[in-house]
Amino acid sequence: MSDKVLLTMNVRRLSRLLPLVLLALALFVPAAGARAADLGLIDAAALKGTAGKWVILDARPRGEWLAGHIPGAISFCWEDYTRTDSKGVKYSSFPANELAALLGAQGIGERTALVIYGDADKSWGGEGYDAWLFSWLGHRGAVRLLNGGIQAWRSAGFPLVQGAEPRQVRRVPYQAQPKPQTAVSTEELQNRKDGYTLVDVRSTLEWLKGRIPGAVHISWEDFYTGKERRPLSGGELRKLLAKHGVDLGKPVVYYCLGGVRSGYAWTVHQLAGLPEARNYKGGWEAWDKREGR
Image (tube, rainbow, N blue to C red; front, top):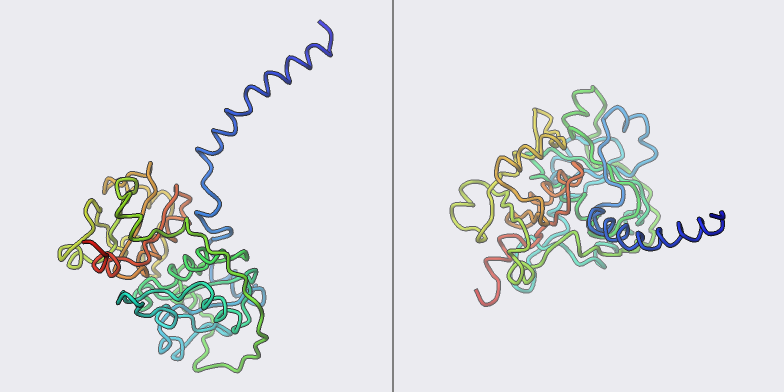
């Protein structure tokens, strides 16, 4: 048999296999819009050594930032960019265009490399919410969560600055490209709630007072560990979810009261490299005020 004939036969075989390969990729590769483009952890020592590379965001309440923050860090607490919306839903994040304007005014563009830190107890997981928020906005620069937060920075003996620092800011455009796959709406949950695995990360008391039907309860505080509040590793998170019977075969939807604590859980999920997850940013506030309930 000639080389030409063999080549023709191999090409035909490959052409028949190609649709199967493409199908496999579609099934097993997560949708690009469903997870952050470049989300990861950074240690305190690595941040100290490369501080000039990053814009640093402090996710704690502004009072905590004023009391002592990482040099150069900008206050970026969730309380400053959420509000009660027209339906009376509290803690609603600003629309993407408003957030883009706010960020651009701070000199942050969509490709700016960011480090976010908090103190999970005092920021209510706001550092994870911020990471989710930038993923939802379609941020294209690197986003890093400081592993261990402000506690790890202090433990390393690195300096803190009190009060507001003088900062020269050059306004830049922020081109937001919202990624709807990172979030879920009330209407989607009402119409397709059997298509999701719901995880309620509120406190036990909140859970007992009322919850979305079919939801599993795992407190958001179980998503971090140790005195420095470090996010669970991939193995630890898999064990936690398996313990509570969470089905990873369907997209996991995390929710809390208004999307902040669930944003933290979402970020830990992403860092662990698990299958698709979404943050119900409206949370119980939106579910409790839904139409036609």
